[in-house]
Amino acid sequence: MKREWWIVKGILLGALLFVVGSVSYVVAMIEMSTAGATGTTALQSWTIQNPLYWLAFVIALILGCAVVKHWPRRANP
Image (cartoon, rainbow, N blue to C red):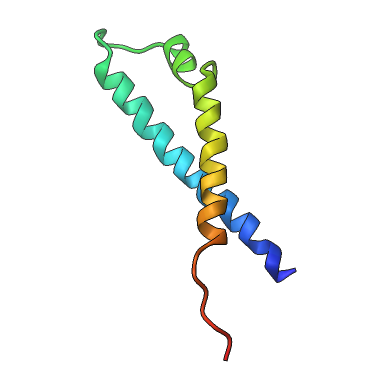
């Protein structure tokens, strides 16, 4: 059972990477918009309607799992 925990840790790390990246991306897009206000349709088109957004989600999960899987562990005495 203990060997499978790297999957849970990797998914959590990947989700955290994705959330931080998503917030940064949305803030940058709002700052770059020429209008003073940003509507919900613009936010949807930048995020959930964009296939690259979902590709970034999958890549973040894979990257999180890869980092956790290959992270060095302490040797058991």
